[in-house]
Length: 255
Image (cartoon, rainbow, N blue to C red; front, side, top):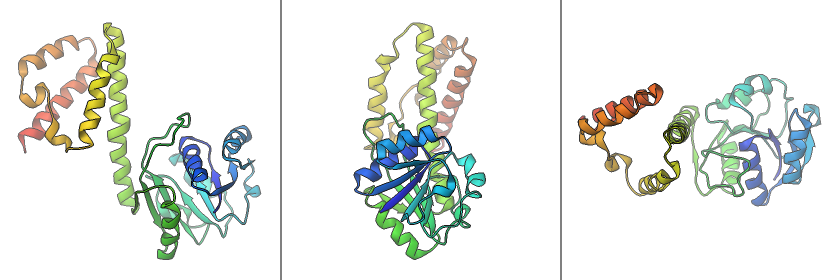
């Protein structure tokens, strides 16, 4: 397929690399910042453009991959096209593309991407389209990129997106806070990394609910009090510690 990618961020970059390696041709990369377009276009062997009117009219597929908050204003600037148009957002509704093309859909990769990574990680693709025939066409393309492709409407994608924020963004923030606390307390965050890895290895095989350990699930109030004392000068971290402790106890006591 001849494909246009609109956007140059993490998702656009990593998805573009995956598309290229799957044997498709990326004809253009669009960004309002021509330098950004040129940098990604060079990686994807495509032509950089920074003017909407320069979009290739004969492209098979246009993939819009921009920040969620930018879609509403951006799509109003796009001319109507005969190309299949998709966006890559989990929290943006399908119908936002309805005025651009008669063939439109969603191609949402359920993964956290960083453009500087050398290897594109595996990712499920959640897809949707405005008509069954278009969905079938999009599914054919999606299966060339991922071994896991499922159809997901707006509500289902939003649920997966919220889940992704909890398991990825929130856990990463906890790691950030823990690393910062370790530095301030003069202990090595690196010594916690094997534990982090083992935690993720376990949940790949078992339900997290059955793996819960620690003083909260044991109702070990003596240890909890000791932890609270050393966290006393870190009110934000202490607040999270208390919230998680209470939530763990409530969850397991109600099972």
